[in-house]
Image (cartoon, rainbow, N blue to C red):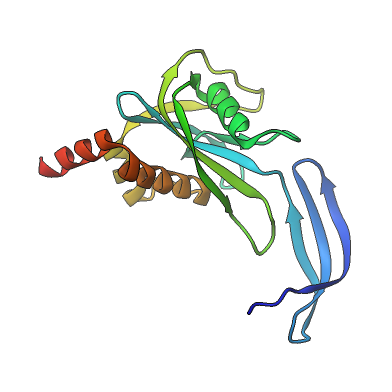
Amino acid sequence: MTRPWKVLSSRVVYDHRPWLVVHEEQVELPNGTVIPRYVRTESPDFSMVFPVTSDGRVVLVEQWKQGTQTAQVDLPAGYLDVGEDPLEAARRELLEETGYAGGEWHTLGSLVLNPNRSPARMHLFVAQGVQLIAPQHLECTEEIAVHLVDLAELRRWVASGKFVALSSMAGVLRGLHWLEQNDKTYAVSETAQVSR
């Protein structure tokens, strides 16, 4: 059985709440090994949505990512406000980033993206039958292009490596799997694609 590590001491070395807090810890492993300067981080949870229109296209967003210094295609997503419900955050972010809303929503669970360093979770949802109801409502730091991609093209994007963020790749794969298991229309359209 895996045993927990013991924290001998901890100090905050960087505090930029709510976005990032960096801790430097001295930890002792179960075998007695001590790591004197282990780095652990805190950042907010975020919600992500796999939104599918009534005609079977997935709503994606493209925006600049400063960390990679590139424009990147992702699923709509955003940080939770303090005390905010993950589903409400997902609905809010979808509407703000794309103008799409509505549909039937289902949870796809949550994932921890970097368990070695942070407990932050991604809460994932699928929304079927979303519709364009409003213009985008972007923050001053956002410039977002919206793409509608059919499921066959989305699979090609997955295979070609167009998604570079682990979060979006996981979200797309989980969303596609959910459709395979729960949407008969999707299964029929995929069979038609293969038979062509």
